[in-house]
Length: 387
Image (cartoon, rainbow, N blue to C red; front, side, top):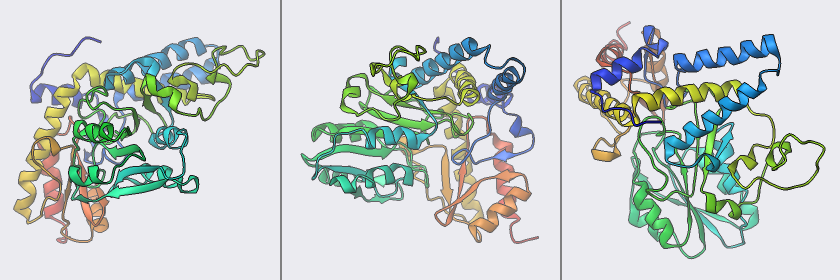
């Protein structure tokens, strides 16, 4: 795909908003939870289901081509090669490929961040019965003390695993610096990228990143149950294959040839059936995002979240999320004027979607959110308790 042109924030927002029917009804600030799908994704999924209804599997060749396109788009999004991408049902599945695939030895350890989403902790903690220790580096409102992180690493650290963007407060981490820490002790770098992909540019070679996982139902604007994992080509031999099935082998559809000759690429992990409608829909959203331009979308996201952060203090609400430089993301965590769950219900009644997390409110804006959406959110918050 050719690089899209640089666009103004207004042009980016206009092009993007046309493809987001949810904006007709909602000021939608909950992309960090479950995002609405794009119009192209919905159309692609509808076509796939309609074909299944009318044609059965006689159109499988077409679906297979569309799955290849989704794989290629996912690879392009992170600067990888298509054969380094495994199509997975969710982020957890991608993380588990690594957590369960490494040849752990008693005394090994994993270093993670203390504020990780559970899906990037439990798969590693589950290795305790194999003698693996999970060490947690403290954070301060999402900010990482990189010296403390490095101090937890030693010669027995096999993996450093982090979320690119903190789910609770939106702090975007310096993956290049974390990659240096991991490389310095001979460890592998695993990145949970679900809260950043689709919103901000990422190239897996910059850190460099060894493994990455993300589901499509947040910033990539796909449906739940369709995501992908990146496994660096030269790291594939380090992992014991999991989920091995009929589609893991080089002979593919020759089901009478029983020979465990695994594919020499990440698709070896796609042993069984794939959520074809979901993956086709994800591909359509990735096509849209990349045609608009991730750099352009990132600028629009920072513009609207900066605007929100200027308005919230005027209501006496403290913004908790780091909002300086590259720590900023699409997530704005802030204090609530009342019980967060109750305030969220009030906002929903006003046509504003956001989340309650960790005793605070969390607004997560995408590149199509505009000034009018911010005004609706501020108005909903200002009328809380005046019913």
